[in-house]
Image (tube, rainbow, N blue to C red; front, top):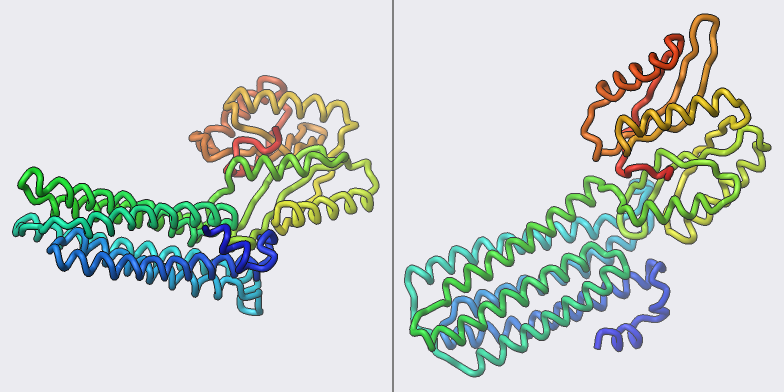
Length: 393
């Protein structure tokens, strides 16, 4: 059904990278969410009041809260689509993350209040009047909420929308919670024991867990999280597809919200190549990354000398020695500076966060191994902490 709405209500809906099209997706899914949740709230609240069920009434209030969350999403899509300005040169896309946080806090508060009312119901149970109308509204709610989960999950992934992903998670938790309420409504009359309050606690726990997960994911985005291994591989594969690229290191990605990502990376090229040709190569790579991956990338060009035989042999030796210390370690920017009494081996050592050794321990082992080779070799090492094991592989 949502695909029908998208096809007929969003012009040029295939152009998902167009900010206006993206905003239209957000507006449509939010308005559908508001309408569906208000209808569910009215139906559940009426029936929950008639049959004296706290879990059905609480589930109704949850739907009203979801309608409010959809309204927040609607506002966030409008705000996040605003272009960059003097005060916000990276745009306003992070409004979606803030909206996700607001939705998550509302979910948590609702869960806490529901636990309070459910415990009161456990301590003071009341008879529940069985009603086919209550069964019907709960089944309808499960179907509608699963539909909402499906389209929010699909379009959230398609548009890389944190607020849609949060809405999808909330809808799925609602499905589980309403299923618990349905079981309580069906089983309690059969066993002559009121499960209403207990199921209310289950509903509350589901809601709190969903809210906590959304908060964690949103905090990761706001604080700055590392890109996925798949994204790193995609970037590295694209850069290395160019003839003339000899190596890659120091990749960093900064996320300022969906469709607002910036990055930097060092690309190694031959020092013997014409600098204007190398510069043209770098420009082409930056342009392709922007067009294909939607990342505004700044590339630092590192010229390296591949014709000095002694440097090449020593570079290979140090690489092998480093991986013997830990298989995830790697080096880049290797240089030899020769003097009358000693030779400096200067390089950067890439240390992924997965490597638990500290820099001092790694340096001590490097010095020991180099001293065994030649006591006139001194090492000057700069340690880089990274979020990938080795983007140069």
